Length: 633
Image (cartoon, rainbow, N blue to C red):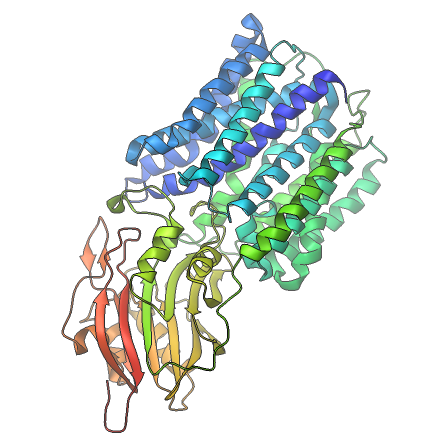
């Protein structure tokens, strides 16, 4: 690898890493605006990606006057200053800084891609980008997916300082390099980066999709990306037909990973990463002739930004506005575009620009070894579950809480992500069993955190999880004791917009088992759907006389027909039994009592409401015991 190659590709590694961080960080920032008027929310969501085109065009114009390398250096300095200011801002100010930083990062990424094309073609760009994705995965592993943007501890500052130094150092070292080439197929890199942010380099997504812990997820992600870096860095070794074969493997493995999940992830994820990285490297190339100017340049840069946003935005929108087809097929469709672009790109003559990067294979191997060295000790710090015990409790302290997908609401001082705060709040209620709703696992809107494993690790509890709309969002049961007889109860879709389900399990006590259920009903203003969901839930519970506690967010007030269906089935509310009625939802739009702990065949005592501001719902805690003969609730 030549000196210019090493300098500019090292910069591309750092900018790709920082851009992935900022894409994940943008989720909680946008969440802060969900109650704002729709035009403001749309502007915030699309703004950074649309601004990329404008800023990159202006940077190119300025670069012709003072040199593109100097423009990149100034842009890197601005980006680092914005990123370092995160911990010192809050509220709308933080939203503005964070989204501006994302726009600047995407602009710098585009500038560096064009410079990288000049020293190595699409092979160089994707090899360096894949290594940047690998480093991002290693960062997530060390931070257990709790991103540095939301941490003020030593780990957070260390990760932030390292990526900022890499970006600044790379921009400074390459400040005299003047080479730049017009790009063809920038959209392909955009789609590839979107797939990385959403799935291929998203440990929370991988863990939930495969039903595995974060440690093996690190290795699987790095194997695929490091392999892609090696394959992309090779000289072109075939035309359209061999590339089409790679494309077929890419589509099959992507479908298995995002649609089928389960054990197939072990093979499908690395294959998908490797093949899609190779295909993107063939779709991205140098455009013949002079650099485009005017509207053509602006359009190319804007398409690059929108290609990053469109796939995961479409998936997220399906939660509120159903697409009419399985939403994860969006990712398969995005992969299909890379297949088409890669095949046509492989058929184009490339001249001398698609050169081999002799050092990239060595660097990819080093990243892979680093992943193993990080994953092995990290696996020891991940949740191992509660130790088995022969001492069964005579009663259980049960907590139910809607976590607001782990994002701190505006009323709580958001935006932000603070899993340790959630853990502390649950610990303060001395929970034996925790029923959780709105548990997100790798959502961009939730900052990419695997909320389930973060909370379970902090509480040192066993857990079971049930994805509802998909494997990234659902309900969970955590317990310091063994969790048995797990049962999933799908609920009717009704008026939508989301698919819902309840998860049930039994916990043994000294007086016999207690069945616990975590449920979250539809939130739209459609009482008939919630009534149908409750009726399905009641019909799905085994009629075996096991004492039962149902906890969750019913999205229904006490006088509603939904709650009446529960009481008609002889379930009694802990709040009403202990005469402590109070609002449990404290949103900016309204306050209401929407969360309940219902019991059948149990006795209640010591009901309390939590006071944590980290969710827009309060947690409910109750002490539960099997009702003795003649004693009901």
